[in-house]
Image (cartoon, rainbow, N blue to C red; front, side, top):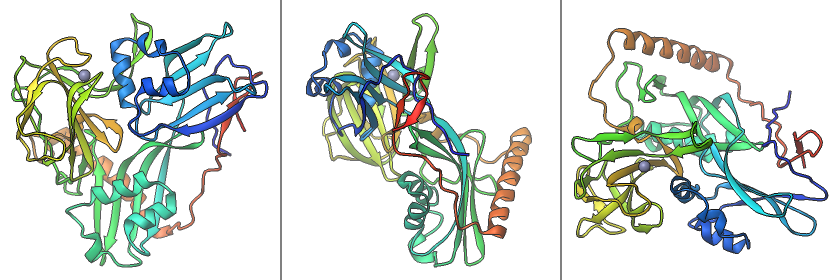
Amino acid sequence: MGRFVLLLLLPLFLFGSTVKPFKWNNGESFLTFLERKKLPLSLFYKLDKEDQKLTEDIPFHAKCQMLVSDKNIIEQILIPMNDELQLQIYLTPKKRYKMQVVPIISKTYREVLYTEIKTAPYDDILKATGSINLASRFVRMFKGRVNFKKDVKPGNPLVIVYEQKYRLGKYFSMPEVSGAMIEIAGKRYAVYKHTDGRYYDAKGAQFEKFIFKLPIRNARMTSGFTKRRYHPVLHRYRAHVGVDFGARPGTQILATGEGRVCFAGYSNGYGKTIKIRHSNGLTSLYAHQKGFKQGIHTGSKVKQGDIIGYVGSSGLSSGPHLHFGMYDGSTPINPLSVMKKKTEGFTGKEHRQFVAIRSKLDRIFNEQMRTKPLKRKIADFPDVYYVDKETFKAKVF
Ligand SMILES: [Zn+2]
């Protein structure tokens, strides 16, 4: 059975209209985009503060879609803002453009990859799945534990158990790895994702070497991370792709981990903002600052705990606080999921939960190692869909 992804159900008529996929220009602001497409700028100004801020988080090269009439009039644009919500610009029957934030219809599948090394894990995973995200994820997971360059030999088997979202018939967003293993010289190195969203080895020790710390001392969280929340009063979908910490203006902001400042400047929504790229591939973001610490600029190297700036309320902020974000590539993740945990090792109920997760994954690993399913079923997705005007269902274009 083919996998079928539904587009949004839209009251659109497709007399000779064309679906044009395009990628979001890296670094382009939402206003510039509207200008370039000759769309009314009021679309942006009518958004409320929170949604305006979200437009600054449109991932680099986000896969967007435009529906254009045979008279070359834009009828609809879909722009994903994260893997749960998208901006929908559409032409009303009265020929006015409107915009709203709507959920992304996507499907998640559990996938299992078994492959044997021919050249290197990254290349072989990429070749087998076509997913750069999965390949880099795997390499990063084992960083510091396994020396891929030195120890991995052709023929070494690896298994990845993961969940992948599909939207409009394509891989979408980061794969969520639940477990992975590689066997080198007869020894198995395995990683298991626990209920806390973190990765552990078979003994329950934290697997990822790179551990972050909170960016504020005595932090008081005022707003948590959510990719999609329905606001019952405003009757609309919201997202908050970071964590807010309430603090007095001028409170020191600390680098969450070692890295290099890849942005120190101003953005409309986030105000005075610093972004730090860390060696494990994640990027942290510190927004609404009052000012940066002297000497901190794009290119600066920072260590964990270094002061980088001071809490303020620059940009679209309702009051002094630090908005703290974490990105895997350009996908926002919950920053708290990668913070250092106080306890080491599991006990009691948590230990039993971990053992259950580990056994389940070990069974999958063993099954894969026994059957060696080198040929993978490839999802039979066509490239592009459009919305059928009668049924409002997605159809192959
Ligand atoms: Zn925030």
